[in-house]
Length: 154
Image (tube, rainbow, N blue to C red; front, side):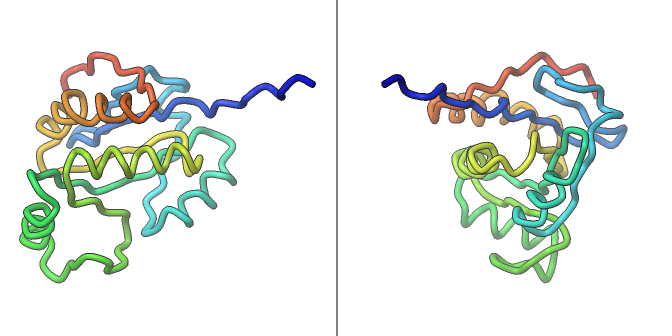
């Protein structure tokens, strides 16, 4: 008896939000105007909305990367007074480290929550550099190859 062919989900697509708009860091599968952006407070709701979309769906995530999770939580609290870990927000947030962000992105891909993510940060240029230098290699070590391209200046 032969084993059935394994079905591999499409690679996760990554984008970063800049003031002028968002820039996809991965080889696009569809033009930006054919992507639906999901800004919701939970991965469950994002998955539900993405499943109903006829076009690729990207989940918006507000990100703050630091050297430790505790440092990220403190800095995020400074940016958003009233925020605390576990508090439901109108958008998915991830104050953490490159490693914890890689874990979240891997989970989004493995659970097939959405086709991609759009990450928001106060310094999108620094976030882009950390994604390419730190997060993408961590994803590769987990078995998720992300096909990055050199982003145009935003």
